Length: 106
Image (cartoon, rainbow, N blue to C red; front, side, top):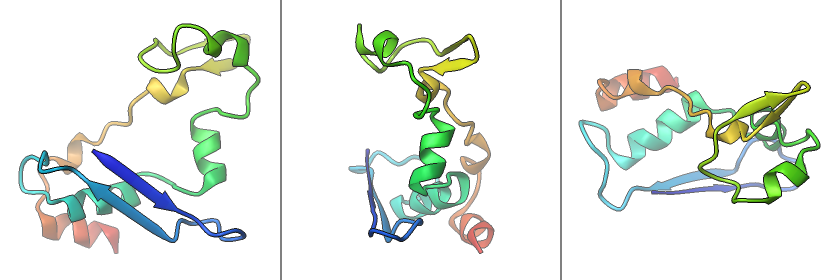
């Protein structure tokens, strides 16, 4: 899937959020519904993304080797490594209908 966010300088929230699933969506949810789930479940402001992924903690030497993705997350001396590997549980949306997702968005 492709997830695209666009921002403007001085505006915290994204101006647009676009999801392209290339036809791989499953169940009753369309690509538009999946876009709405992202809007509900994730704070897409740049500062919030940096905080949730622990991007402002100095850890570059350890993460520079052996790839950034597919590694086991861990915490050492209070610093979180590979926090982006801790997937958020979105399973509650799997059983929802399009109308239920739209209602939760409001």
